[in-house]
Length: 116
Length: 114
Image (tube, rainbow over all chains, first blue to last red; front, top):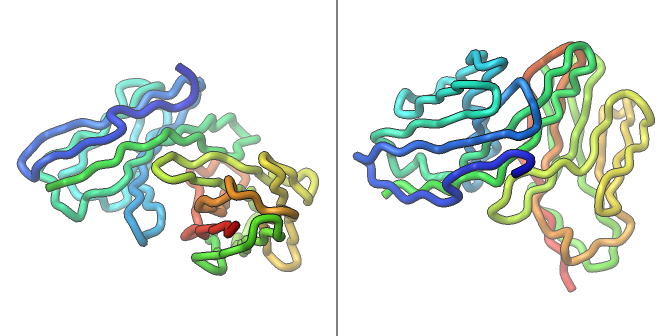
């Protein structure tokens, strides 16, 4: 596998379910991101991890819980979601190589989440 | 703080016509600028980037963009549209010095008519 992979690609869950989204990057990057992309809304940055440490949480509701066990893996744990949480969830990674840090981000294909 | 404005949420062109997608940025320090493309039900793919070298940047699929500091613009162009160019395009900005974040515009959906 190369690049950024996300599993599952599609997920349908009820409001009382607990599920997890997984992201894995094979690029040797240091930073990982979760984004939410809803219809008719701009791309929303949710969380940023830098060297496994969370450095940004953009006022995301606690029903979304991220986990970054190492620089290659990122999870998004979901519980008691609402129908308005239905969206495409995108994972990205970037190298953060010191001064010449362009912060070019590499995206996974996304997980299409539907909350019933 | 930096920001990006993409003029026109929808652009429609005929196959073979010029594609012009507009992006204006705001940044108090020299920016790095990116264009990403998103095909339906897929993630974002980098088209091209400006990192303070040449102001005219060539990307994949025949796209290019020109950094114009005086106009704070980074418009994306392609001389001749192809049906396969139909997608959503996002302009983004980051700044030199280790910022972790990319700031994205709201996107422009490009339709190519036969």
